[in-house]
Image 1: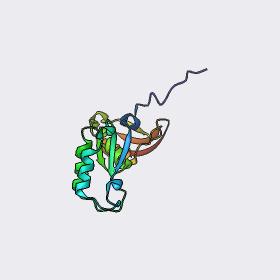
Image 2: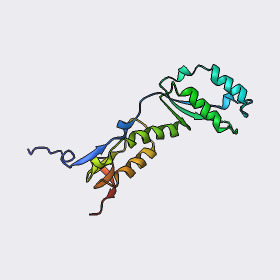
Image 3: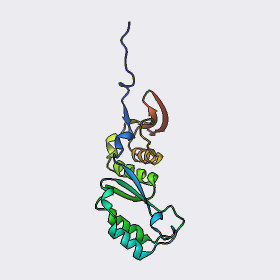
Image 4: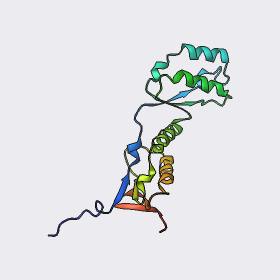
Length: 168
């Protein structure tokens, strides 16, 4: 019998798994709607009292998205005031829902990559995993890698979809 050879391991392909960039932590949404008068109008005095009297420590270490699910006009300063109340406790605060929160978390993590370390690399961006990775993370990573990579593929090293090949 001949010896089994792992062609994937010997291929020189660099595999990147976006799950490695996943930021752990509880994700929560703060909806302004219940804090509006008749769920439509922001009353400054009432809102400032709520900000002052609310126990913000329940957001300690959490990743928070701020939204208003009501079809109401909310002044920008209200979101700013809410951010100031959350800031001493929350690990991250964004304006938007869970999708915007996740996109922001991945964008920050990917910004820390030095893409030049992938110069002339053959890269496979892993496609399947246990965590739900936002499409924006794949787009952002592809954009970061293109100026440096020899090639970019999607999937698993044994079964890839070719995306990009540098012109030689």
